[in-house]
Length: 248
Length: 248
Picture 1 (tube, each protein chain N blue to C red):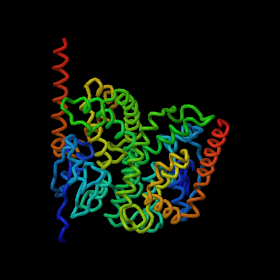
Picture 2: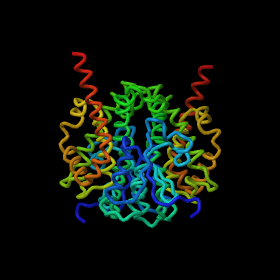
Picture 3: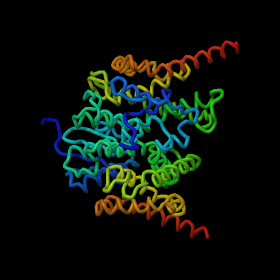
Picture 4: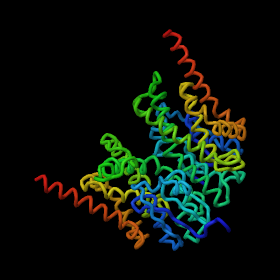
């Protein structure tokens, strides 16, 4: 085993949606892993040292007994099939598995793409003291376009992916890796102004019930892993309130 | 079996990259399927009839003995695991499979996203007689930005994904569903002006060798399925030449 480190290492930033999904998955399923925290906003993913682990400079990345892997969905599939994990996370039944895969594939260019852009252009790029060159420069037009796409993606989740009597995506009775990935993405929207969150999610009752069901199925780990995100959300809302009060 | 149609139906448009990948996969592996041609540019995916099959209005979509599935990567995984298909397409070995999954996941927001946008904004949206409302309106700035992203994605394929002694992605000895998906995307670039193709691919020798290897591994079906795309590429190049000659 010379030169090959042992155990599972998880390179994550708990402010990153896909990194949270992988972290929750490991903690909920008792998968022993060393969590190594990397701050994306500080450029930690762009160091020469990190590039040796993942030249795509992204989190989450895992190293499992020397085997390097990135892309959160690939990691979730890999861990669900190599660890002792309940079947519902990534069912062996070919049709059920295919439906989960279809949701995971759809996610990238729909929910992920638009939610990422709206958060970057409405929140991250205007944070005071944000390090230059890590995220795109603020562009309100991009945020507006992303909002249109995000509304369309959320409507698809509400009316198609949650269109069954059971609580979880694609009418599954128990939580899957697709639920976890999509919910971690939607939780990032807590960084938006309250009125905008209300516009996007207020009338979508199935999504609201499903968010609760996924949290319930993965707590207390879900909330533990989200505590940094929740703290940042509170900080942002407090800042907006102070600014509003000062301008009155 | 009342109400459940039998056999595998493949809804495809051979001018669509992911639809070609699924069609080639079926033909090469002798998977019996009825190919049903849908013209995306004509709005065939937006009819009420098609929405019954796939409410996301996209090709490829399959119906397998009544089981409806869309998203090309999910379809490729499903067919590779439910049909009698050689292991190399989607290896059972967890590490090799995870690397293929990682490439497939990376594809969406990198190669797919940028190649799609450059083709839409440089070629499709300026075609005479193109039906309105199916594709975004022509936007040169989007095409330019997509070109930057596409160059970055191609460089990643050249230097990271093809960085091994073996011919295929992630140093595999034989072709996988990831090779097929990415190569079908890159082939769409034949619709760009020759000088732009040269800029994007001319100096990338590993990509060139890999394109040949994937074609060789999947011919004659690869070329058969691409004949409509090649015909359109020739038509576009002839049109540009006539226009150039007329302006001299």
